[in-house]
Image 1 (cartoon, helix red, strand yellow):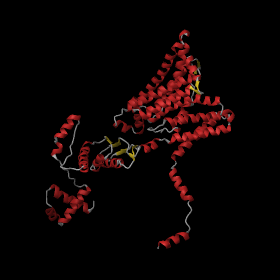
Image 2 (cartoon, one colour):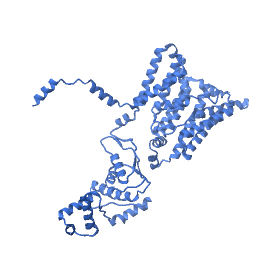
Image 3 (cartoon, helix red, strand yellow):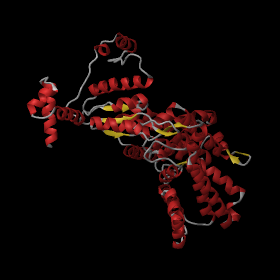
Image 4 (tube, one colour):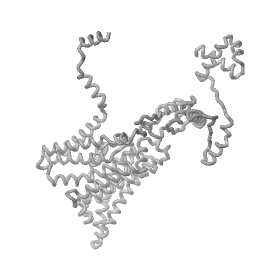
Length: 524
């Protein structure tokens, strides 16, 4: 410890603890009075001594008591003073709030923090009071696309420095200058990117294989085949929004299709068709039941999503094999088969179903409280809990929805081709994950766009159809999938602004030395 610090500690003890005057302290220490005053100020700056003012009016305020009773508060403090301006009032509230927060925070606590002028004033008055195992969680995004500053980062930093805590940020934009700026931010680049890739794919295969690829029959088959892949991809996207995954989706779809086919073929011949709607509802119920099993394991038991759904995938596949004996089942309600073969203006009804599912899920994710809760759970689970969101209920809801969409895919399976087997679509699991990520879904959770997934499913179906028209193998198609996915991910990682800056500086023509010298001469 420095000599000045030692003198300061001795001075503050004599002055504050023993009650000596500055002159008496100066005599005792053999120093001048101005030197003692500087040592006292140094002690306050270094934190060797703190000064607290306890106003009994604030602790025993009638207003505070009424607030506690009215709102059921455990404790309330009232900051007041004569003729305060708005700025002075906020500063006073910040001081009182900082004192209260310091008293409330204990070891191992999670502290939820918002932002604003009052929170900024509170954070500025927080004294250093280190705790053990404290987490400071940002409850709402603070990035601002306007002139208004939120000071969210400074507030989080002050809290973490005061309590020696670890921060948990929520880097989301919340304030925009105007609606135009909001619409720009809402535009997801994955949609524009997928539109470009889709158009390029259509153009390439139209040139390379026009006699096969561009036929009306091939285009209709593409729309027909993309329905089942697309619905599965949307279901996978929902599970990934929460930071999870559902590897059992294809198994659920097959189990549903097997259920429908079995019930239909085992029915009495006279009542087969009239029980068709009931049979379809039972098939959808199978998906909900499977989703319930996944949801309980993940949300309430706490099993990791990838392990839970891997296990249930094996169970559902095993049930399907035992049920069918490893054989392919034939038969489905005639109305369902007719629906799968019907087209409106050349567009298959199954593709229209896919479009309606995309619109409905898009509405849920973007316009409903459930969608907001799913995104918040995936981006910051701790902040979600502090916001009053029950994570277990949200996770259960997400896997119920994915289970339902999985069973709906099974209905699409059997509508397109009235057969069912335990191993149908075995390669779809990886494919739908690729489509979800390619469509802009964050694998870590928190963000997804249904439009991007819709276009990604359509794009890969076009690529597959193009490869088939050129008589290329499924292995080559798999390579193409990987190339497209890796290419998109690499492009996302590139800082294009930095690339543009470097290229500009590389090709910028340097000024001749003579010109520089002449310019310098003119300035002189």
